[in-house]
Every structure is written in C-alpha cells, then in structure tokens.
Length: 276
Image (cartoon, rainbow, N blue to C red; front, top):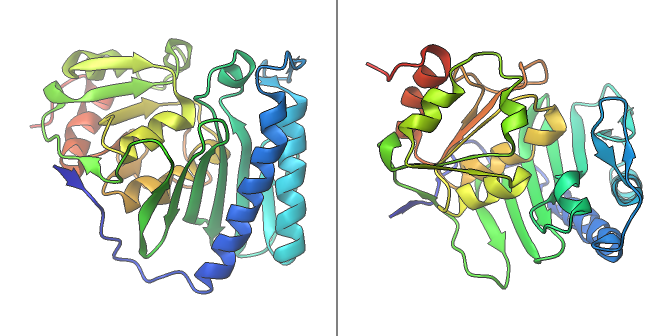
C-alpha cells in the first residue's frame, strides 16, 4: 500500500505559469545534457574537489536564461554560478546535474534539480532524468506527479518498522563527514542499504521503492527540489534532528516515505538508540 500524499497547504498562486517556466527550463536543460552523456566529456575539479563539466555549466546557463526571460523579477541561485537578483521573495534554486560523478561515469542516476522558494520555503520542485526520460514534479497544494514511459506510480510506501526499510545513501565517503557517529546504527536497524543514486534515489522514494534516505554535506541546491516532491507523495523531509530544512540548515537530510518512521530514524541518528 502507498501513501499518495494530500497536500494541506494552499495552492501556489499563479501555479501554472510558474510550472510552465520550470518545465521549459527542464526540457531545455535535458537537450543540453544528452549529447554530453557517455561522450568522454572533460571533467574539471572545483575548489572543493567535486567534479564539474561543460554539461553542468551549459545546462545551468540555459536554465537561467529561460527563467530570466519568463520571470525577470525572480532571484536565481545555482550551484555553478551563484546568486542573481537577490532580494526577491521568489528564488529559483538550480543544480544542473545532481550526481556529476554518476554522469561522467555513464550512469543514468543523476538528475537536473529545479526548485522555487517562496520566502525561503520550497514550494515547487522538479527532478528531471534526461536519459531515462523520467520527471518528478512536486508543487504546494498539489499531489506529486511522475511523468515517464517507465513503470512507476507516485506514492510512498507504508513501512512503519525500520527493520523492513530499504535505506539509501549516495556514498560512504559522505557519511565520513557526518555530524554524529550514529549513521551506522540506522544502517543496522534497516533491512538493507544501497549506495548511489544522488537525487534519483529520492525519486525512487516518492515511487515507494526506497523507504529511508539519510545524507549529509548537502547544500540547498541538493535538497530544495526534493522537499515538495517527497511531501507531495506522502513522505517527510527534515534534517537529522527532525527539523524543517532551511537555508542555514546543517547539511543533514533525512527523508522517509512513511512519516511513522521519522521519530525512530531521528533517534538512531542522534543517539544510536531506538525511539522510546
């Protein structure tokens, strides 16, 4: 059985115009990215040693151009080129290729992330996988949508016991920088752990294929688009303390498909012990 999500917040004003802009940007970014996939593209290392390619940079410029044309009064924050038009209550947050390591090694588990914040709160999010043709769209006041030729139905899975849960995390190296030493307690409590996936794993959580994701060192462009998608599918996204994510969050992200698992996962991540 799945949770389909029943958003309680008021619908987003001017929602269709905002969604049209976001989907146009995602369509254009996909056209930019596809020719570079498995093409032997040159990989550069940024100052933090994370990889970047011409596909990342060109896709972000393309997204920015479309948003600037359609919504010129909105701010834009992107991983590669920073913040433009600061001060607007609306800010688009972009990660042109979330999972560049997957992209440069030919794995179709990366995605383009496009989010809209209203007064700092994520109200619209898109995960777009340009190779498989999958797209997840979350928007305040509407259930999450999944657009694809592949099998899949939106709705997180009912899974109240962590011992039955499928746990996912992008990489063991990420956990080496965790703010607490207890991630392994969550791993031991779960049924299984799988590594890899980046934003794609969050899309799978919204489809009821994954139950829990716990990661850290996440920037706002890594998680902003995920919040409306997962919550619109019936799940929850918080930091490791169970708090709402915001621009000054500590970089930890905890996503659960069944909200009943949240307290137990938070307890394990902070104390190493199950919730009482």
